Length: 240
Image (cartoon, rainbow, N blue to C red; front, top):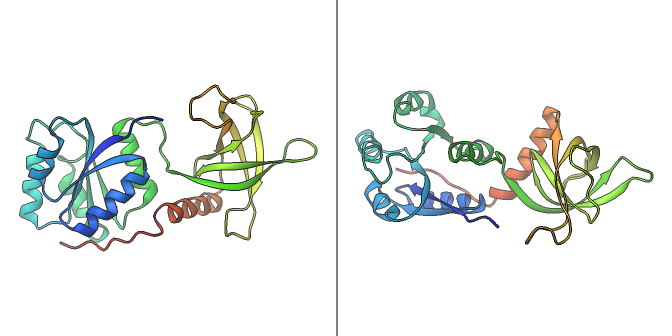
């Protein structure tokens, strides 16, 4: 399993720190939590930090000082910086942060947007969050249709457990019902990764599939399901 990347989180409120810390932990990062920019800079000294997330809902002067310090201190100035801001001030703040931040993400946070932004800024290949699941999937090719277990899911694809994975680039059609859903989802997909029993350390045998040309309503259904499963138990009302 790959080592978790460190992400510095700067947020004044304890509730915000808890929310962002849990969220980034579920994204498979190690959150480094601080209240102030000065504390954050001291905390990352000697650590291999990949990115900074700053809660930008601060009084104007405090926000300007925080960003100025982050962009001037040698320990952090070259790190990608994501600034979080409330949706009401999004247009104004995007213009304000354009020259000093790598990206601006509005609150309430969209899980897919934040995950994709972090992935892009630190050079990760995966750009949508995935969750562990367990439900049956019908593979429509073949007679009779085969049933396999899905063990993780994202809006970009899924992983099916099998001791006999199909070759990469194989095209398949699947149907399944998401947990707690009464409807059936039908999707087209392509095999993009295979793992045979015993060939990869800590990897279960199976195959990773990428969805192809998902209809908008199916994409939204998958996105909502993943987001609820990952952060449905979390709440964060930003306070200054």
